[in-house]
Length: 221
Ligand SMILES: NC(=O)CC[C@H](N)C(=O)O
Image 1 (cartoon, rainbow, N blue to C red):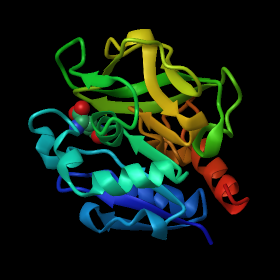
Image 2 (cartoon, helix red, strand yellow; image 1 turned 30 degrees about the vertical axis):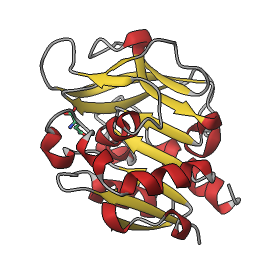
Image 3 (cartoon, rainbow, N blue to C red; image 1 turned 135 degrees about the horizontal axis):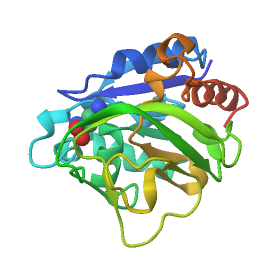
Image 4 (cartoon, helix red, strand yellow; image 1 turned 90 degrees about the horizontal axis):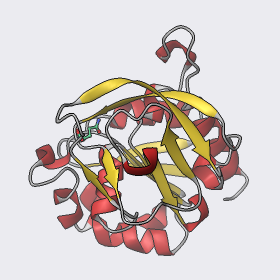
């Protein structure tokens, strides 16, 4: 059975929900792994979950990249390991230089926590490949530093806000590289992985991500 590592830094706080989504929806083996014990060779996929690694000091996500985890992350990516960064995990991936752009404080200067609609663009790869191109899904966001900014409009698989909650350039909610092998996203799929998590009238937008991940890894992605 394929195995998914969910890496934890001091201050990570979404690892448990992520673990449940991977185990129950993707139906894969998964464990929470300390950042300094992560060895990419032992896993079939890696998720960097949300939270406040090192208290978001300096800039959200940057201190996590000073861990030796960074080296394992880069080697894993180069060797084809599927990697998903959720919220603070997305911040870690941009700070590590694995994904393009930066995540700046929200335009409102406030923490934004609400359900948003997302448009899935050019879905491909082990994380997003289960969605239809242009599909609209609901997921919650909860962040203070989620305003994506970059010099060039990201290409390839991405997630776009329908109602941009933070001022992100090009309505970017998530970006990818290597044809969707590595994805970073500010919305929380693990908080929208079960029907009971979604408010009435909204689809649980993360359900397809985890279902597809299970299929993709079992098919030997
Ligand atoms: N939910 C989270 O992962 C929080 C993200 C990050 N610490 C921020 O506030 O920007």
